Length: 215
Image 1 (cartoon, helix red, strand yellow):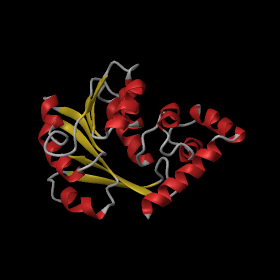
Image 2 (image 1 turned 45 degrees about the horizontal axis):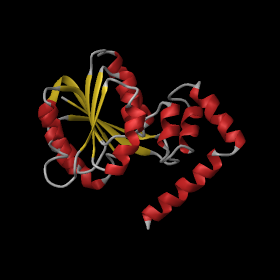
Image 3 (image 1 turned 135 degrees about the vertical axis):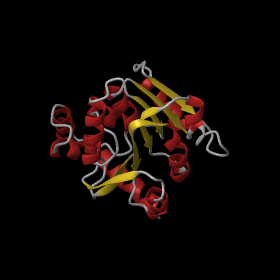
């Protein structure tokens, strides 16, 4: 039932976005403060539309958490990033970090993203089947340590456990939708500190959670 509601909402937002005045809103938003109300408002019309999200230059995270990650990456110009769950955030990360390795389980979504990431030579985009160890173990295949690890795909509790040994000294993990009850135990028992953000989030009209985990 919830998926039907989400699809209906997305469809309505897309039809509104196609209206002339809304296209002007999106154009103005692209020149506005990344964390401001205008850019956030435009993101509501871009929900589940990766082309519009890329044009706006936004990930689908909590706004305040996004600001923290941007500041973290500015302080580490050679930052290496690993991401579980590819999307508009992959492009955003590539614009802020030296290199991004992203793994996606959904084959059709992966194919759709190939064209979008092609103009970013600092992105490696991989498809891995969700069953078995291929997806959660992709960070081990990548090798080395990462300054930022994003956990925003499927099997998040398992991905979090795999991510921690690959976190560089002083690095952080972003885990999105961290208010969901099924993630709380893994977060609280992972051995890392948590800064938990709740409030305005891109693409959705309601406040949502994103957590930054740190040593």
